[in-house]
Amino acid sequence: MEEELQHIILYSSRSFNSIIDGFSAKEGLAIFELDCHWRICSWWDGEHIARSYTDLEGWLRFRKDGAYHFLPLIGGALGWIAYDQGIEGEDLPQKSSQIENMLFWSCSGAICYEITSGAYHIIGSKRFCDEAKSGFEQPSVKQRANAVSIPSPSILQKDVYTRSVQTLLEEIREGRVYQANLSWKSQTFHIRNPLAHYQKLQRYNPARFGAFLQFESHTIVSNSPELYLRAHKNQKICLESIPIKGTAVRSREGKEQLWTSEKEKAELTMIVDLVRNDLGRVAEVGSIHTHHRAIRRCGDLYHAEQKIHAQLKEERSLIDAIRATFPPGSITGAPKIAAMKLIYELEPHARGI
Image (cartoon, rainbow, N blue to C red):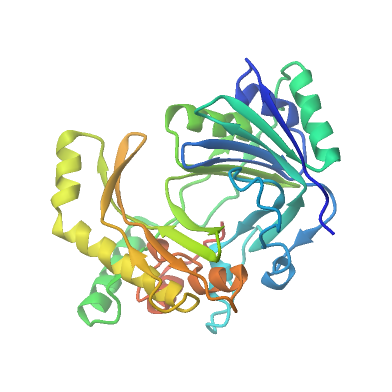
Protein backbone atom coordinates (compact mmCIF):
# COMPACT_ATOMS: atom_id res chain seq x y z
CA MET A 1 0.00 0.00 0.00
CA GLU A 2 1.41 3.36 -1.04
CA GLU A 3 2.13 5.83 1.74
CA GLU A 4 0.06 9.01 1.63
CA LEU A 5 2.13 11.93 0.42
CA GLN A 6 2.56 15.23 2.21
CA HIS A 7 2.88 18.36 0.09
CA ILE A 8 4.17 21.65 1.49
CA ILE A 9 4.69 24.84 -0.54
CA LEU A 10 7.22 27.34 0.78
CA TYR A 11 8.56 30.66 -0.43
CA SER A 12 12.01 31.61 0.81
CA SER A 13 14.35 34.52 0.20
CA ARG A 14 17.25 32.07 0.37
CA SER A 15 18.64 30.69 -2.88
CA PHE A 16 18.30 27.05 -3.87
CA ASN A 17 22.08 26.60 -3.49
CA SER A 18 22.16 27.99 0.04
CA ILE A 19 19.38 25.62 1.11
CA ILE A 20 20.89 22.48 -0.38
CA ASP A 21 24.26 23.32 1.19
CA GLY A 22 22.67 22.13 4.43
CA PHE A 23 22.20 18.66 2.93
CA SER A 24 25.71 18.41 1.43
CA ALA A 25 26.89 15.75 3.89
CA LYS A 26 24.07 13.32 3.07
CA GLU A 27 24.78 9.95 1.53
CA GLY A 28 22.84 9.34 -1.64
CA LEU A 29 22.42 13.05 -2.29
CA ALA A 30 21.02 13.91 -5.73
CA ILE A 31 20.61 17.39 -7.18
CA PHE A 32 19.57 17.95 -10.76
CA GLU A 33 18.08 20.37 -13.25
CA LEU A 34 15.08 19.67 -15.44
CA ASP A 35 14.55 21.52 -18.70
CA CYS A 36 15.20 25.04 -17.29
CA HIS A 37 11.99 24.83 -15.23
CA TRP A 38 12.91 22.89 -12.08
CA ARG A 39 15.81 22.39 -9.69
CA ILE A 40 15.42 19.28 -7.56
CA CYS A 41 17.08 17.85 -4.46
CA SER A 42 16.59 14.48 -2.79
CA TRP A 43 18.56 11.82 -0.92
CA TRP A 44 18.69 8.14 -0.08
CA ASP A 45 16.22 6.99 2.51
CA GLY A 46 18.50 4.13 3.59
CA GLU A 47 16.24 1.26 2.59
CA HIS A 48 16.76 -0.04 -0.94
CA ILE A 49 19.52 -0.23 -3.56
CA ALA A 50 19.22 -1.62 -7.10
CA ARG A 51 22.24 -2.86 -9.07
CA SER A 52 20.52 -4.51 -12.04
CA TYR A 53 17.58 -4.06 -14.37
CA THR A 54 15.81 -6.85 -12.49
CA ASP A 55 16.23 -5.01 -9.17
CA LEU A 56 14.99 -1.80 -10.77
CA GLU A 57 11.93 -3.33 -12.43
CA GLY A 58 9.56 -2.83 -9.50
CA TRP A 59 10.65 0.77 -8.87
CA LEU A 60 9.95 2.29 -12.28
CA ARG A 61 6.20 2.68 -12.25
CA PHE A 62 3.66 5.45 -12.06
CA ARG A 63 1.71 6.06 -8.87
CA LYS A 64 -2.02 5.41 -9.07
CA ASP A 65 -2.64 8.85 -7.56
CA GLY A 66 -1.98 11.38 -10.31
CA ALA A 67 -2.68 14.44 -8.19
CA TYR A 68 0.95 15.52 -8.25
CA HIS A 69 1.67 14.84 -11.91
CA PHE A 70 2.87 18.44 -12.37
CA LEU A 71 5.83 17.88 -10.02
CA PRO A 72 8.98 16.40 -11.59
CA LEU A 73 9.81 14.07 -8.67
CA ILE A 74 7.80 12.83 -5.69
CA GLY A 75 10.11 9.96 -4.71
CA GLY A 76 11.36 6.83 -6.41
CA ALA A 77 14.73 5.79 -7.82
CA LEU A 78 17.81 7.97 -8.31
CA GLY A 79 21.14 6.85 -9.70
CA TRP A 80 23.00 6.01 -12.88
CA ILE A 81 23.48 3.50 -15.67
CA ALA A 82 26.97 3.46 -17.19
CA TYR A 83 27.57 3.22 -20.93
CA ASP A 84 29.07 -0.27 -20.57
CA GLN A 85 25.84 -1.64 -19.12
CA GLY A 86 24.35 -1.29 -22.59
CA ILE A 87 26.62 -3.87 -24.23
CA GLU A 88 25.21 -6.81 -22.28
CA GLY A 89 24.52 -9.80 -24.52
CA GLU A 90 26.85 -8.58 -27.28
CA ASP A 91 29.64 -11.07 -26.43
CA LEU A 92 32.02 -8.28 -25.46
CA PRO A 93 33.98 -8.90 -22.24
CA GLN A 94 33.53 -6.11 -19.75
CA LYS A 95 36.47 -3.72 -19.37
CA SER A 96 37.43 -2.87 -15.81
CA SER A 97 35.92 0.28 -14.34
CA GLN A 98 36.38 1.95 -10.97
CA ILE A 99 32.68 2.56 -10.54
CA GLU A 100 29.64 0.30 -10.73
CA ASN A 101 27.87 0.10 -14.08
CA MET A 102 24.48 0.49 -12.44
CA LEU A 103 23.47 1.82 -9.06
CA PHE A 104 20.10 3.24 -8.01
CA TRP A 105 18.87 4.10 -4.55
CA SER A 106 15.39 4.78 -3.24
CA CYS A 107 14.18 8.16 -2.07
CA SER A 108 10.89 8.87 -0.36
CA GLY A 109 10.42 12.48 -1.42
CA ALA A 110 11.95 15.56 -3.01
CA ILE A 111 12.46 19.30 -2.73
CA CYS A 112 11.33 20.74 -6.08
CA TYR A 113 12.15 24.39 -6.75
CA GLU A 114 10.03 25.93 -9.51
CA ILE A 115 12.28 28.51 -11.17
CA THR A 116 9.52 30.63 -12.73
CA SER A 117 7.41 31.07 -9.57
CA GLY A 118 10.14 30.83 -6.91
CA ALA A 119 8.07 28.22 -5.03
CA TYR A 120 9.64 25.34 -3.13
CA HIS A 121 7.51 22.18 -3.20
CA ILE A 122 8.43 19.73 -0.44
CA ILE A 123 6.72 16.44 -1.18
CA GLY A 124 7.05 12.89 0.08
CA SER A 125 6.67 10.81 3.21
CA LYS A 126 6.20 12.50 6.56
CA ARG A 127 9.75 11.58 7.56
CA PHE A 128 11.21 13.08 4.39
CA CYS A 129 9.15 16.27 4.64
CA ASP A 130 10.10 16.81 8.29
CA GLU A 131 13.77 16.38 7.40
CA ALA A 132 13.49 18.68 4.38
CA LYS A 133 11.70 21.43 6.33
CA SER A 134 14.46 21.45 8.92
CA GLY A 135 16.89 22.41 6.17
CA PHE A 136 14.94 25.61 5.52
CA GLU A 137 15.11 26.48 9.20
CA GLN A 138 18.86 25.99 9.50
CA PRO A 139 21.32 28.77 8.62
CA SER A 140 23.57 28.23 5.62
CA VAL A 141 26.48 25.96 6.40
CA LYS A 142 29.90 25.93 4.86
CA GLN A 143 30.34 22.98 2.54
CA ARG A 144 32.92 20.32 3.16
CA ALA A 145 36.16 21.27 1.46
CA ASN A 146 37.28 17.71 0.84
CA ALA A 147 39.55 17.43 -2.18
CA VAL A 148 38.46 14.89 -4.79
CA SER A 149 40.88 13.35 -7.28
CA ILE A 150 39.49 12.13 -10.57
CA PRO A 151 40.70 8.50 -11.06
CA SER A 152 43.77 8.43 -13.27
CA PRO A 153 42.59 7.39 -16.76
CA SER A 154 44.34 5.65 -19.59
CA ILE A 155 45.48 8.42 -21.94
CA LEU A 156 44.78 7.79 -25.60
CA GLN A 157 47.68 9.62 -27.20
CA LYS A 158 47.15 11.79 -30.25
CA ASP A 159 48.82 9.41 -32.71
CA VAL A 160 46.80 6.43 -31.43
CA TYR A 161 43.61 8.47 -31.62
CA THR A 162 44.44 9.62 -35.14
CA ARG A 163 45.00 6.03 -36.29
CA SER A 164 41.68 5.05 -34.73
CA VAL A 165 39.92 7.82 -36.65
CA GLN A 166 41.51 6.58 -39.86
CA THR A 167 40.21 3.09 -39.08
CA LEU A 168 36.72 4.48 -38.58
CA LEU A 169 36.88 6.41 -41.86
CA GLU A 170 37.80 3.19 -43.65
CA GLU A 171 34.89 1.39 -41.97
CA ILE A 172 32.57 4.18 -43.17
CA ARG A 173 33.93 3.92 -46.73
CA GLU A 174 33.33 0.17 -46.61
CA GLY A 175 29.74 0.79 -45.48
CA ARG A 176 30.01 -1.04 -42.16
CA VAL A 177 29.02 2.06 -40.17
CA TYR A 178 27.69 5.49 -41.03
CA GLN A 179 29.16 7.26 -38.02
CA ALA A 180 30.83 6.43 -34.72
CA ASN A 181 31.63 8.62 -31.73
CA LEU A 182 35.21 7.91 -30.75
CA SER A 183 36.26 9.37 -27.40
CA TRP A 184 39.35 9.71 -25.26
CA LYS A 185 39.77 10.45 -21.58
CA SER A 186 41.24 13.68 -20.31
CA GLN A 187 44.24 13.80 -18.03
CA THR A 188 43.74 13.60 -14.28
CA PHE A 189 42.57 16.77 -12.59
CA HIS A 190 41.35 17.66 -9.12
CA ILE A 191 38.16 19.17 -7.74
CA ARG A 192 38.39 20.56 -4.24
CA ASN A 193 34.64 20.77 -3.64
CA PRO A 194 32.46 18.81 -6.11
CA LEU A 195 29.16 20.40 -5.02
CA ALA A 196 30.54 23.95 -5.30
CA HIS A 197 31.98 22.99 -8.70
CA TYR A 198 28.54 21.81 -9.88
CA GLN A 199 26.88 24.96 -8.55
CA LYS A 200 29.42 27.10 -10.40
CA LEU A 201 28.68 25.23 -13.63
CA GLN A 202 24.99 25.89 -13.18
CA ARG A 203 25.65 29.57 -12.59
CA TYR A 204 28.02 30.25 -15.50
CA ASN A 205 27.13 27.61 -18.09
CA PRO A 206 23.77 26.08 -17.16
CA ALA A 207 22.60 22.91 -18.88
CA ARG A 208 19.04 21.67 -19.17
CA PHE A 209 19.82 18.35 -17.51
CA GLY A 210 22.72 18.96 -15.14
CA ALA A 211 23.11 16.58 -12.22
CA PHE A 212 25.10 16.04 -9.04
CA LEU A 213 25.09 12.55 -7.50
CA GLN A 214 26.91 11.69 -4.28
CA PHE A 215 27.00 8.15 -2.98
CA GLU A 216 29.57 6.61 -0.62
CA SER A 217 33.00 7.09 -2.23
CA HIS A 218 31.74 8.30 -5.62
CA THR A 219 30.62 11.75 -6.73
CA ILE A 220 29.33 12.43 -10.23
CA VAL A 221 29.06 15.92 -11.73
CA SER A 222 27.22 16.20 -15.05
CA ASN A 223 26.31 19.19 -17.19
CA SER A 224 24.31 17.66 -20.00
CA PRO A 225 22.13 19.56 -22.47
CA GLU A 226 20.54 16.39 -23.86
CA LEU A 227 17.36 14.47 -22.98
CA TYR A 228 17.96 10.75 -23.40
CA LEU A 229 14.50 9.44 -22.43
CA ARG A 230 11.47 10.77 -20.61
CA ALA A 231 8.24 8.96 -19.82
CA HIS A 232 4.90 10.42 -18.79
CA LYS A 233 1.46 8.90 -18.48
CA ASN A 234 -1.95 10.09 -19.59
CA GLN A 235 -4.16 7.20 -20.65
CA LYS A 236 -1.07 5.37 -21.85
CA ILE A 237 2.67 5.76 -21.26
CA CYS A 238 4.33 8.14 -23.70
CA LEU A 239 8.08 8.19 -24.35
CA GLU A 240 10.14 11.15 -25.54
CA SER A 241 13.76 11.48 -26.65
CA ILE A 242 15.61 14.57 -27.95
CA PRO A 243 18.98 13.62 -29.46
CA ILE A 244 21.57 16.32 -30.20
CA LYS A 245 23.87 16.29 -33.22
CA GLY A 246 25.65 19.43 -34.32
CA THR A 247 27.36 22.10 -32.23
CA ALA A 248 28.48 25.65 -32.96
CA VAL A 249 29.92 28.62 -31.09
CA ARG A 250 27.16 30.97 -29.94
CA SER A 251 27.28 33.66 -32.61
CA ARG A 252 25.09 34.69 -35.51
CA GLU A 253 27.54 33.13 -37.97
CA GLY A 254 27.84 29.93 -35.93
CA LYS A 255 24.07 29.52 -35.75
CA GLU A 256 23.66 30.10 -39.48
CA GLN A 257 26.40 27.62 -40.37
CA LEU A 258 24.91 24.99 -38.06
CA TRP A 259 21.42 25.46 -39.49
CA THR A 260 22.49 25.22 -43.15
CA SER A 261 25.21 22.54 -42.88
CA GLU A 262 24.27 19.48 -44.94
CA LYS A 263 26.77 17.40 -42.96
CA GLU A 264 25.18 18.35 -39.62
CA LYS A 265 21.68 17.75 -40.98
CA ALA A 266 22.67 14.29 -42.22
CA GLU A 267 24.32 13.37 -38.93
CA LEU A 268 21.24 14.27 -36.90
CA THR A 269 18.97 12.47 -39.36
CA MET A 270 21.00 9.26 -38.91
CA ILE A 271 20.64 9.40 -35.14
CA VAL A 272 16.94 10.29 -35.28
CA ASP A 273 16.37 7.24 -37.49
CA LEU A 274 18.34 5.14 -34.98
CA VAL A 275 16.22 6.41 -32.06
CA ARG A 276 13.03 5.74 -34.04
CA ASN A 277 14.24 2.21 -34.67
CA ASP A 278 15.09 1.66 -30.98
CA LEU A 279 11.71 2.98 -29.85
CA GLY A 280 10.01 0.83 -32.48
CA ARG A 281 11.02 -2.26 -30.50
CA VAL A 282 8.71 -1.28 -27.63
CA ALA A 283 6.26 1.25 -29.12
CA GLU A 284 2.77 0.87 -30.52
CA VAL A 285 2.79 0.54 -34.28
CA GLY A 286 2.22 3.93 -35.90
CA SER A 287 2.77 5.87 -32.66
CA ILE A 288 6.30 7.16 -33.37
CA HIS A 289 6.41 10.79 -34.52
CA THR A 290 9.31 13.13 -35.21
CA HIS A 291 9.32 16.90 -34.82
CA HIS A 292 11.25 19.33 -37.00
CA ARG A 293 14.97 19.95 -36.48
CA ALA A 294 15.60 22.86 -34.12
CA ILE A 295 18.51 24.97 -32.89
CA ARG A 296 18.80 25.45 -29.13
CA ARG A 297 21.13 27.63 -27.12
CA CYS A 298 23.04 26.00 -24.28
CA GLY A 299 25.42 28.31 -22.42
CA ASP A 300 28.00 29.59 -24.89
CA LEU A 301 27.04 27.08 -27.62
CA TYR A 302 24.28 26.28 -30.08
CA HIS A 303 23.09 22.69 -30.59
CA ALA A 304 20.90 21.10 -33.25
CA GLU A 305 18.30 18.72 -31.86
CA GLN A 306 15.17 16.85 -32.86
CA LYS A 307 12.35 15.49 -30.72
CA ILE A 308 10.91 12.00 -31.17
CA HIS A 309 7.94 10.69 -29.22
CA ALA A 310 6.15 7.35 -29.11
CA GLN A 311 3.54 5.40 -27.18
CA LEU A 312 4.70 2.39 -25.14
CA LYS A 313 2.94 -0.91 -25.82
CA GLU A 314 0.68 -1.96 -22.97
CA GLU A 315 2.54 -5.22 -22.47
CA ARG A 316 5.90 -3.43 -22.25
CA SER A 317 7.48 -1.87 -19.15
CA LEU A 318 9.68 1.17 -18.60
CA ILE A 319 12.62 -1.20 -18.10
CA ASP A 320 11.91 -2.61 -21.56
CA ALA A 321 12.08 0.94 -22.94
CA ILE A 322 15.48 1.52 -21.32
CA ARG A 323 16.84 -1.81 -22.52
CA ALA A 324 15.71 -1.02 -26.06
CA THR A 325 17.25 2.45 -26.20
CA PHE A 326 20.33 2.48 -23.93
CA PRO A 327 22.96 3.66 -24.54
CA PRO A 328 21.51 6.49 -26.66
CA GLY A 329 22.60 6.63 -30.28
CA SER A 330 24.01 10.13 -29.97
CA ILE A 331 26.98 8.74 -28.01
CA THR A 332 27.46 5.54 -30.03
CA GLY A 333 26.86 6.03 -33.75
CA ALA A 334 24.88 4.23 -36.42
CA PRO A 335 24.12 1.41 -36.83
CA LYS A 336 24.34 1.21 -33.05
CA ILE A 337 25.66 -2.31 -32.46
CA ALA A 338 28.25 -2.06 -35.23
CA ALA A 339 29.39 1.34 -33.94
CA MET A 340 29.59 0.06 -30.35
CA LYS A 341 31.71 -2.90 -31.38
CA LEU A 342 34.12 -0.61 -33.22
CA ILE A 343 34.27 1.74 -30.25
CA TYR A 344 35.01 -1.23 -27.99
CA GLU A 345 37.88 -2.32 -30.25
CA LEU A 346 39.40 1.16 -30.61
CA GLU A 347 39.02 2.66 -27.12
CA PRO A 348 41.37 1.10 -24.56
CA HIS A 349 39.29 2.13 -21.57
CA ALA A 350 35.82 1.39 -20.26
CA ARG A 351 33.59 4.41 -20.79
CA GLY A 352 31.77 3.90 -17.52
CA ILE A 353 29.74 6.91 -16.40
